[in-house]
Image (cartoon, rainbow, N blue to C red; front, side, top):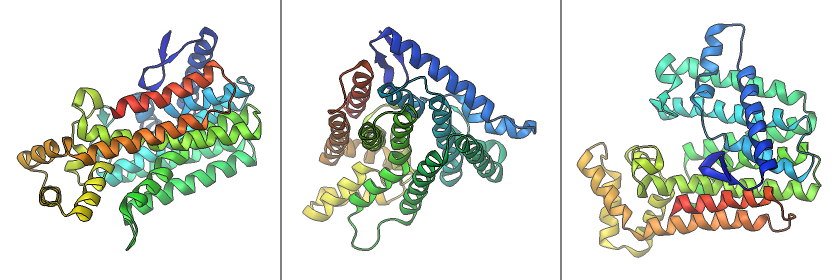
Length: 336
């Protein structure tokens, strides 16, 4: 049993493991080829995050989904490259919007070269993804365009915030479905579609990907509060310090508004204050860690992961299905 892909996923079949590893290696080579330019500086900037590594979660999902058809079909690896290029492009843009200094353990592109270069590099990656898509046919282009629209819409909705009278938690979950779930849904869809799987199987793996993607993001929200830096790979409470309204904070605000508990209202006031102060930040983090809002956010995360797993039920039993189920279990484990 060998560990491959994100979360220490274990593939329990030698043939599947060999094919997945070979597929991921082909994707890696495809990413490097797609990010080459005649201009050396563009190549350097475009390959900055490729060479920094990453989980390659989306390509892995493409490869596993392809096992429900012909896993050696010619469009599978290129479609996996497309989804990862698209994901990488969004990271360049996200780092500009978030004014991030570090990404994947290296200096972010915007810190190294400035915002303009980072934005244009993201655009370059989108262009290269589109070039590959053109060879995969009009249906692939349409699928990617729809997903990209949802992704951008989710980002805009996050920036704009919920409209008056809209439940902030419902708004946030819609944002996550667009920002994160849409591209992971496409990963499952491309893998099955390019492999020639039945339409019902394509639909199942699309729904699975979206639900798993939301669960994955919500698990990150929980980890930001509950974990130490060793577990999460980043400083605990980073989102909290930056004022990003993650699910545990939204659940706290919901409870405070509903119950008017003085301690909850006091914690909300603390969160609304200056959390750049280490003492105030530490107090907010410690209080959130023992608050029922964190447990509610954890239950929300587990529910999405369980829904993703349940979606797979109609698929035939095989090692690929077991691996997809294990991804759901891994998200639950991360959420605690």
